[in-house]
Length: 456
Image (cartoon, rainbow, N blue to C red; front, side, top):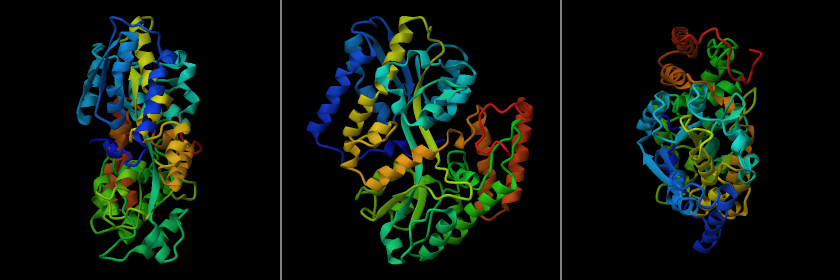
């Protein structure tokens, strides 16, 4: 997986409810169809969906026959490997080929696709039954561009602090609420070579080390870009945050973990080799599955620790957007937007959760009896609080983000391996991004998003 900040395919909840309970939610999905579409209204319409295999997407695909039978539309799903999906949908959109009516898009693709008018705004077609305000606010923002809703989510996550309750209790260590407390606890919990205090992502990549390192950048007051799109992520605040991230890896992490990605981080925690990690909510099932984890029953959950400027959980989402090639006055557009809303509806999310596909895009699901009866209450609370405080612009929501993030990730990896200083690495990354932005005509143009610390 190129971008993946998480193993999205793994987010399946093993213990969700009995078949009879699940059938009630399935019935609700079917009975909700009249709220989203008219019977027999779309005969002759074909909706082609470019997507990749995810539990939530596969669940939608497995239910497409309900929409087809009710409306007369024909729905085709084309599943691409993750690394191939982007090239196919960019080519389709840029060339106005019209091969697909729906694109599966990561949230940080929205700026690229919306700014190029490759996808269509949806605000005017959202139905009351969709309950748009039930989505987590961060997701509504993430799937908007310049105030216009440009897609709807099917998968979302934030990062949380995972910790070993037994190890913290044995040393009478409180759950860290600040980065300073996290550093102190990680060192105290280190018992090399048997266990280590913490594991964090060090491997280069905007979806690897940058994904979690940004929490430290933000928590110490660092920005990415100034008001004229000039790099500022080599500021004193950014350097300080990077130094703290590197220090905890060096002082309390396993040997060589400065080049670890999420597979190594998650497997080390599941194996009982580290006491803490800051990672995606996607790993909840892994850490609680006796077939994959040695720490079942001993895992605690909390909001990510705060730095001097607050706590900044990472976020990531996957969703669907309507291609611009679909004529907005056509029956095909109505069919596509109706299907999109039904497929990502509250009823559909409850049904897939009841079937064991548990990720929450909606407040109602997060706080439902369905989840509360089956999942650790501390986990549910950590997710809820994380979704409340996470920021849409945790990473800059700009068309150039991925190339910029990869440049940063390549340079900061050398800090986590001890090869260079935070200042030298960030200065080099800032110079490289400046050169790239200058070539692309982006440097010294007005920033198109709201920075978290606009005064810098």
